[in-house]
Picture (cartoon, rainbow, N blue to C red):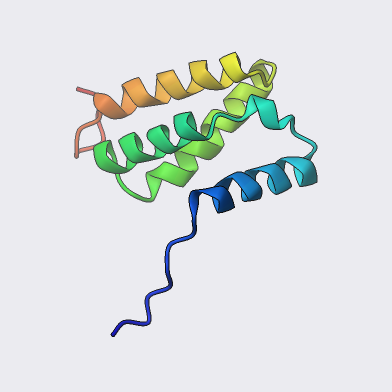
Amino acid sequence: MTDKPPHLPVEALDDWTAAACTALDIDRAAVDIGLLLDLARDVAHGVARPAAPLSAYLAGLAAGRAGGSREDTAAAVATLTALSASWRADGEKS
């Protein structure tokens, strides 16, 4: 037997996102959970696991500076996804 906590249901992520958006005064409709999770996955696998949350933050910062729309987020995520796909272990773009 393990002391590992059970995984939360998918609804918990939706509930958390809604609560976080309310607390931060962000339009929930502007948040694409799947897009951000894909970014985290791609960066975690292409760069390093600790780079995933940092990259999500940077994408959000860039999107906010660009206007904060869903499209601004998608553009920032696309930039970081492309960068992670070309990243090499030595830290230089290939």
